[in-house]
Image (cartoon, rainbow, N blue to C red; front, side):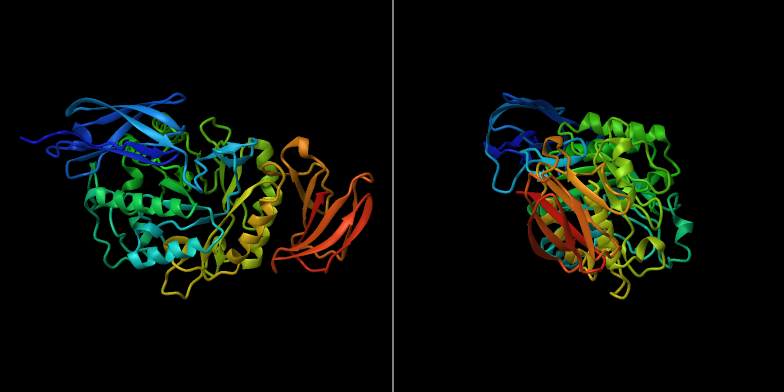
Length: 510
């Protein structure tokens, strides 16, 4: 006779750490639909119910993330066992663990312990579904970069320069035969492809265990995992499963991943070209996520042409794609006023040389857009699409970066971290020929100014500040990544500049 029940509950864990309870249960029939497990988690400041999930081979997992230190009471129940109670002692977080990212100061982010979070993101849509060697290269590249957020897909992606089969699939079954597929005929197989044979009631644990591992690797690197739940670039049928299967998938994802502190939810990449889903469908998807995620991770939805209504209460931040080839970062100020939420520019075009207009801007232009967005109080995102490297493009596959822009993001991040309080906003007193940021916190007005001159090349600028205060002036070359201390000034004064583009001036009240 098989023994079903609790097999592992830890005695201790740490604050904001994914904590796992393991159960032994039946594997006969369809455990994904016929069995369930859950836990009631109670501490002095927290009371949540979390759902478990089946992980294959008779193993059921329940995951939670303790928000407080101290003793937690845990009551585990399942369809195949009598309830079991236990206690878990939650210790202080390990060094470097600041908790999940939250919206802060209305338009910015901070970790739950109050540490400011300045997003420097990148996009690698299917890096985690590549070979072990390529995944290792990607993680090493991320380790040596300034990136602290990465966007990627849970489902495989079918698009130009990405026509190979992934390392695994999210469901049991077999895919359509894609032999002979070329970039010229790939659209014929897009979305509703015939020939796939999936059982949407049975997840593939191998696929999701690998996703677990990738999220854990990102967490060790201090990188937020911005997971794209749906997208239209699909020859396998995952973009048009129907509402019942979508909901089953979402509940599985929430049960499996909400306990990781570095998770973000992106409902879709380019929601408006998923033709099988209506706004009502997206609202239902959002409702399911809100209901099933007890830890309130950041949530958004990404557009192609039609902007979603980011005023919707379930949206925590705006995830923006460029609205024009030439202007995106410049619209940050308007979007902040319109939505009064953090503005994350996840696609402002990519540095590269492919044929598409969204994938062939220069490194200088990418860095310019980053600074333009940052000074306006937004959070820019990067991508790289260079050909000539065995058809491995960072934007899709990861690997090694070949661009110039990413080398300069650390310099920007260091400057952003010098902001008094948390976050910048565009000064309402900007003159017509300049843009500059000041602290979001109104109580810090007059203490800090960050001017950016973009593609303009002034030889000097005149400033008129408080005559009774003293200001430290530093000239920043955002491309060469240099700082030049110009001394302390008061009242009206000139700052000489080299007459070249991409210069900035940082002024701090002494």
